[in-house]
Length: 458
Ligand SMILES: Nc1nc2c(ncn2[C@@H]2O[C@H](COP(=O)(O)OP(=O)(O)OP(=O)(O)O)[C@@H](O)[C@H]2O)c(=O)[nH]1
Ligand SMILES: [Mg+2]
Image (cartoon, rainbow, N blue to C red; front, top):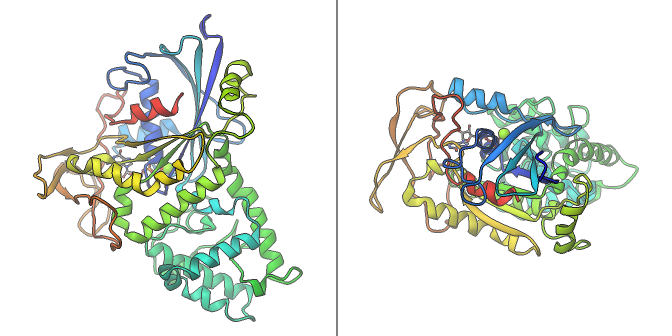
């Protein structure tokens, strides 16, 4: 730290969003741009701001390091997107910025596997509360009722054994995910604690291959009121296992985000349009649950003034932390034609703005972001086809293909508002291989990641 820089301002930025929404790519590109900062390509803060003395630091105790070098290496040397995240991770760095005269910045970035955020509603609920909530969800919504029919049928039988209930629940979870419903909890059904993700297969096979708990011996599922008598099984066993699951999986992964100063909420509009109305509904529900449990907004005990003072006068590990900024971010903007990009932001705003405006003392903004610009667009007429150029990641059968020549392909145009109903597959935004500069120390082209960073690193 230089002589003038008498204090360190700590910014803790958590990134949340469904699986495959672009969290890890966003963080990798952000770190790259901070480390190899070029004020022309990544204008941060006041115009002309320069970054210096960037140093990566060890993560906090208990956190796995964010594999920045591995992810960047995949992008640069192998032309591949980073691999799927299997555990929560943190990246810590410190740097000076020329627009902060007296302070340097200690930045902590948090990543998690997207599957885990579906468990958010377990926080603050005991097993009975969680059972009630899940059963209400399953019973009061036609789509849920249809896909969870095996489980709803099983709980009607008062003599159903633990094994029968669990098997029916797993079959219902399999039906849900195969119908693009991502609110799958316990999330270990999709991604177990060894980091093994579920592979697509027939629902009955998926139900056998996966478990719903910490492991195969500690599974649980919701129970109806008539099976929730203390002192009986499986209620006692499920309650205990549920408690262990919350303590070992949900608290460390999701509740840890409560102490962030800013939250980046990724809403992958392309995935929601492509996945159908069920995916939209679930993503919206998950963001709502997250807001309830992470409770962003000004702390009631210390108001904004005390917070400002504490940032100056308290040692940084003492400074109170709570989320005061939320950046809603629609990622993968390069998969949408420029004619539709305003609509992409408007769709995100319509879906989630209410969760932020309902909270006092919370600043929120919306960003369309491309973390690694990997396509270019050809001119289009309103109403005409949206043609992009990039290296397709999948063939016509949906399977991954090796990288080949760049090609023209068509992306869907975006509606002005979310339709009332739409099936999976009506919209398509073909995935592409990442486009990285050949020069190894040159960060990828990005759009609006600089604006997002300016907002969350305060
Ligand atoms: N074209 C384009 N595709 C992107 C961009 N960012 C992410 N993607 C695509 O989205 C996929 C998922 O990105 P990740 O960052 O791994 O997603 P994640 O949210 O970390 O997913 P989990 O680790 O499963 O929670 C990538 O493999 C790319 O196909 C982008 O800026 N442009
Ligand atoms: Mg990830």
